[in-house]
Every structure is written in C-alpha cells, then in structure tokens.
Length: 244
Ligand code: OAD
Image 1 (cartoon, rainbow, N blue to C red):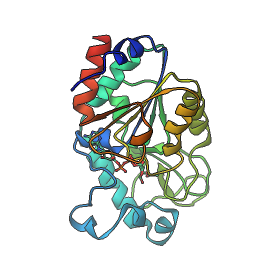
Image 2 (image 1 turned 120 degrees about the vertical axis):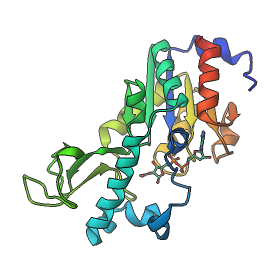
Image 3 (image 1 turned 60 degrees about the vertical axis):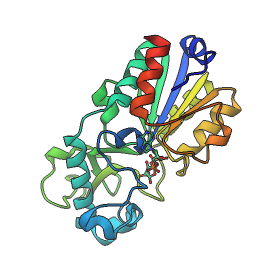
Image 4 (image 1 turned 90 degrees about the vertical axis):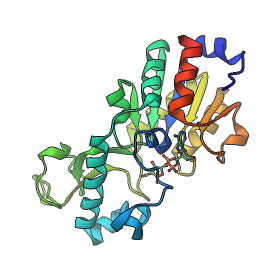
C-alpha cells in the first residue's frame, strides 16, 4: 500500500482525530456485515425484518433468538488487527474519539477507551417501555423476559430501524466531528443516517477525510484519501508508518 508522503507528518501532528467504524471492521473477526446475506434458517429474513420495533412487537421470541445468536457469535470471536490498530492510534493522539455503528463490543475488547456507540450494544438489555433498566444479557433468563419494574418486555439495547439514536452519544459524536482535524471512515457503507452524515460534517468544518473500505462507497468521491482494502491490513500499516 502506498501512503502519500504528506499524510504521515500530518497525521502525526493531528491532535484531534475521529474514526467512524462500521460492520466492515468486524468482518475480519468473522462477523457478517449487514449487506452480506444471512445463513441457514435466517436466510429467509433481512435484518430489516428482525431489527425493528414492529418485528419485536409481532414476534418477540424470533427477535430474541436472532439477537441471542448474534451475541453468542460476537462472544466467540476476537478483535482483529484493525481493532487493535485503532486502539494503538488512540494511545498516540491527544484527543481521539472512536464512533462506532457496531454493537459487538470488539473495539473495547481491543483496548479502545473513548468509544461512542451510536447503535447500542448487544450485550445489554433494556425495558421496551423505557424504564431505563439496563442489565447485562447474562442475568436475563428466558426467551423474551420482562422488565422487573413494569412487566413490559425486555429487549436488546440496540438501535432498530426507524428508531432515534441515543441523544448523548450522537451529541458527543457530532461535537468531536466538528472539531477534529482528521476524520476516518472505516468499513462502513455510509448508507444509514445519521452516522453517514458525520464525514460530510467533518469536511464542512475543515477536516481531512480518509476512507478505508474494500469497496467504493457513496462517500468515496468526497474524501481526500481513499485506501481500498481490508481494515485489518491497512490500519496496522498506517499506524506503523505514522507512529511506529
Ligand atoms: P454495512 O454492512 O452496510 O457495510 C459494511 C462496509 O464494510 C461495506 O462498505 C463493505 O464494503 C465494507 N467492508 C467489508 N469488509 C471490509 C474489510 N475487511 N475492511 C474494510 N471494509 C470492509 O455495515 P455498516 O456500514 O456498519 O444499523 O452499516 C451501518 C448500519 O446499517 C448498521 O449499524 C446497522 C445497519 O442497518 C442498525 O442496526 C441501526
């Protein structure tokens, strides 16, 4: 991979960096992205059929089963070289914010500390009526358990299609984006709002945009640097070249 020579000192002297990550970063850990077809019994469904409040209302057991399997899978896999390189980057950059759309917790397992989870985390559950009871999944027994406070169904603490993002997380992400010198968009198709708007906001406020993806995306024409390839290969090389 060729790293443009001016980018290396620029990144080294950038005190404020934001990295937005998507399912592509976890792909090399063995987790499927949202655009990959589902396997086996689940092949008949699209994520949009299962990851909605309406689906949960209609078939809570099915939705629990879907998330239970995803959680099991996420618990079985390890962070990959891309996750580890982002954790390493954070150690070198005074103000580093990792904004992720992933719900698998792999960035934290890799050692990233300043992580903003825009779409929640599948290891937690919450009351579907908003009691705000958050528990670890392990404590929950049964297929579609109920809230100890109000008796409503408990659900995974993730953002479903058509739902608002958690306000504090979004505000933190927007604030970091507005003030960063460099914004990385890594392993995300850039199709789902409002996360997809963050790179363009960064650009409007003067940041340099860097994209890492195996494919071109709708964002690619707007970026300053595009590295085509796997996050688990490009990120370690970039971190080594800049801070190694
Ligand atoms: P997608 O599945 O939409 O996109 C994954 C992106 O990663 C694609 O652009 C791939 O080309 C790229 N990719 C795949 N493997 C890669 C690799 N090894 N290295 C680098 N890039 C790779 O996933 P997201 O963009 O995360 O929302 O999807 C965004 C949101 O849409 C998700 O958080 C989810 C989904 O609907 C909710 O659940 C609310």
